[in-house]
Each structure stands twice: as C-alpha cells, then as structure tokens.
Length: 425
View 1 (cartoon, rainbow, N blue to C red):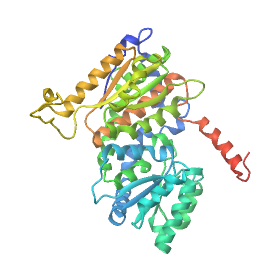
View 2 (cartoon, rainbow, N blue to C red):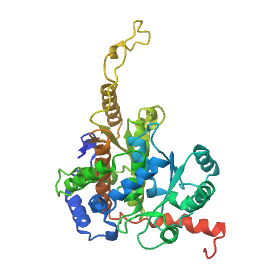
View 3 (tube, rainbow, N blue to C red):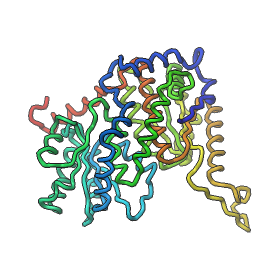
View 4 (cartoon, rainbow, N blue to C red):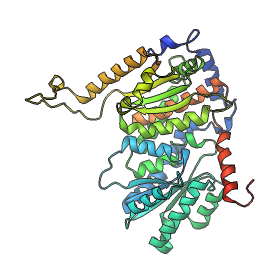
C-alpha cells in the first residue's frame, strides 16, 4: 500500500486540520453505494470480477496479437486509452525488439498525427483494439473507420480476425458491429465509468500486448482494494482526500501532481482525467495539473516558488529504483562533480526531491508526498487503487457526484450541429 505524508502541508491547514469525520462519512457512502452515482461503483470489485471472468481470455488474445503483429493500434479517447497509455509508458517505456508496439489513435482529429501512425505501421502486420461503450463518439469512430479500411486493404476477407472490440456487453453500435462481424469482444462494465476502467479489459488488453504482467497487476489490485476498505484515519486514501479538501477550503484551488521520473508523465494524464471529471462540477473543484521534475523546475519552478499562492503540491515518489547507476569519477574534475563520484544516481535524486519540497514549502506551497514501492506492476496497481479510492472519497466530501461528467456533453452538441449531423440540435 502507498504511504501518504502531509507533514509538509500541516502548517497550511485551516481550522483543526483534515476532517476525518467527513472522510469516514464519505467512505461509508461509497462503500454502501448509497450516494449519487452509485450505479457506477463497481470499480472496487473490478479486479476480483475480471480475474474470475475475462482475465484468461484477455491474456490469450494478447498472446495471439503478440505472436503475429508488430503493431497494435488502440483506438479510444479519455478513459478508453489514458490508463493503458499511462501503464505502458510507466512500465514498458523501452519495449524489447520482439515486443509488439502499442500505438494510440482516436484521441483527436488531427490528420498529421493520424498519418504519422499509419507511416509507423508501414508494411508491418497490425491489429486494432477499438474501445468505446457506444461506438458513436466521433473521434474514435472516425479513426476506427479509417483503420478498418486499412485492415481490409491489407488482409481482405481476414480483416475481421484482426479487430478486437472492447465495448458494452449488450447494446450500442460497436457491440452490434462486433456481433455482426465476429470480432473478438471484451466488456466495458456497466457499473464502471471510463476513467475508472483501467483495471478492466479497457486497460488490460493493451497492457498485456505490451508485455506487462497483467495477472500480477490484478492480484495486487485485489489486495490493495481490500486494504483501502478499512475505515480508519490510517487509511492513506482518507489522509490524501481529507488533506487536499482542507487545503482547498483554505484557498488552494490548484493541485500540482509532481514526479521526478519522466516515465510517470502519462500516469499524471490519467490522474488529471480521474480527478478533473470527478470533482470539477457544480461550480467547485480542485483543478488538477501536473509537472515533471526536474525539467519543469527550469520552467514552471519560478511560478511554483513565487507565484500566486493558490497551489498545493503532491509529489509521487518511489522507495527504490529498478537499477543502480553510479556517478563516475573524472581525473581532471573540470566540472567540479567529483564530490558526487561513486554515489548512486537514485540516492542523489532523493536528496534533490527533499531539497525541492523544502524550497516549495518555505515559499508558501503546501506539499504532500505519496510513496509507492517500485516502478513495477505492484507499484502501478497500488497507485491506481489508491488514487481511485481517494478520488471517490474526496468527491463525496466536497458534495458532488464523483461518477458523472455532464459537462463533457456540451462541446459534443455544438460539434455535431456545426458538422451538420442529421438530427443534431
């Protein structure tokens, strides 16, 4: 389980500090499924269900793809791709030569980006995993039409064998197409919203194709959700949710999620959707943003240190690196770095993390740390379960429905009207 340390935020708390009574109330509502959005509270039980239903078939499909194709194109937007991309960039940033490369399409409408993906495929064998509950979301639907045509050009009557659909179990355009064409299909659970779906086939199939041990992730996630179900002030999800809500009530409107590992970048993108869609409604909500250290210390660092005091900062860190790397000695010492010679780069990095947090706290930014074990399957699973549980609790603490996203539909209505879709208003 992850550990939360909010000692760097304690001096900035308002009132008597984090409201654990409210956190308990919110957790009770979540666990009892008695609050708004209760129809979408299937995610805490999702790892157990997926282990007992689709996991073996997901792994078998991934092995089929890995055995025949050099590319898997994952078509989806929002929660249909962010979790998988976050996991792959986090756990498999440099795939082996024999691995199938996973590319992501359908998350925008830029023709140059689409052509770049097609160019990367070239003459190589490829498969497509289209992910959509309805099949009618414009961005992935357009991309799927394009890649389906490419499959037909390449494979002819065998094109349908190269399509894997992750969609609703019973209804929708994509489900109907999958049934009519015999595509192998996996389920987007009815009681799990897109941004909470990474531990379903939505995230697990692309992860498995990339060579990630998804069985290990699911086994860890089952244990993590069990640990996070405890009603206690020692629960790290309570600690994080209550601390950030207290800071928000004191005027800290923006939360910066920081990490000193560049491979965490897409995990931060997943986190931004999770918290942005869950909490940003009814005219309230903490704005989720992210920074990548140390690079952003040389761009955003000035604002963080001395800009408007509306920020809180949460640092994700890891107890240990996967591999050591010692700084070499240099006989001339022209760069003056021999004082670091022989020291491990990971150890130096931890010192820098502490120095940055100390500077930001002294500059008036409340800082929390979330510590996971290592950048591996267990570390990934523990972070996903922790952030999901804390998000549900934090959302209920703020008084919103953390499981809907009514504002997402506003641009779609305008878009369909402007594009001339029949029946659009």
